[in-house]
Length: 388
Image (cartoon, rainbow, N blue to C red; front, side, top):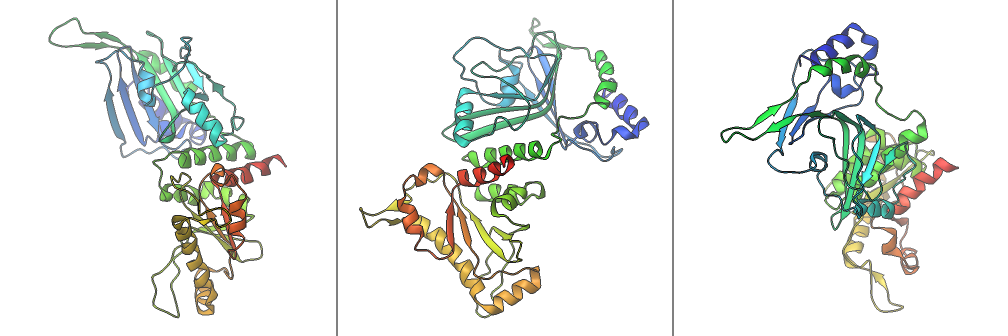
């Protein structure tokens, strides 16, 4: 506070034009995380990259993690997964490290398998090398670093927006106590440069949106993600373009409640309505990308969709039934302002490899107004439009 936060606050307050360009999380801390190792103390900032004002009141959440009791790479502990490189060649952290992309070998395989776009942004990449390590006695900073791992649980991602490593001397020679010696006086020299620093955010539309697609891949590529995690991400205003571009929609609405007008039935809430240029909407329903069951069952020439997949299809059929009733259609249009009549139903589920034969296409042709789309198809359908 004495050497950095306080002077930074006063500097930007005296130069208010910098508020909209300086890193937002330095001005309005959502959370500050402190990590103590044997050679460094690290401080990580989280929050929005952009600020509109300097808050003079209120606080922030502080977290503390202790790693000084063991020999380890502090950055690897912060990232949260161990690297599996087959070489001993390591990369030390420079004093300033911007746009790092450092997957483990497992992470590289998973990103490639998911179709992650490595050209979406400028970056410094590490391939088959151990996790970078802060050098003893030297300050280091990571800005916009992305780290990935893969395994049975799917893709794991760790993004670091801003992380400072402050060198320290760890003295455990006394039997009664340990000593941590560090000096933050030099942080005063960082105040003016950091106040004038613009966080690396893409300027071109293409390179604004592609990183967001990568974030979406990270969400559904992680096996711990739920259907709600996936749909909540897509419902965010900044991410709606994924659905509008894929389905040629002018607007997207998520989880609108549909009340039955002519009969007593439970309300339904489709995941998304995608409104076409003609004013009519189709329905998009999301399930999980990883399904540990067969999609198709039955003997040769008697193939059919499995019971669990048919239950998903039946769910979308209820949506179609709802809009077959003119009373429901009238109520819906008056309440939400757009039309739905004989909507095409899209079920997004599984991966492309799950539908590696033409049999499922023959089966799906028997269903009216229903399309099955994989997560790979969804991503490819959006990305390809940037290269037209």
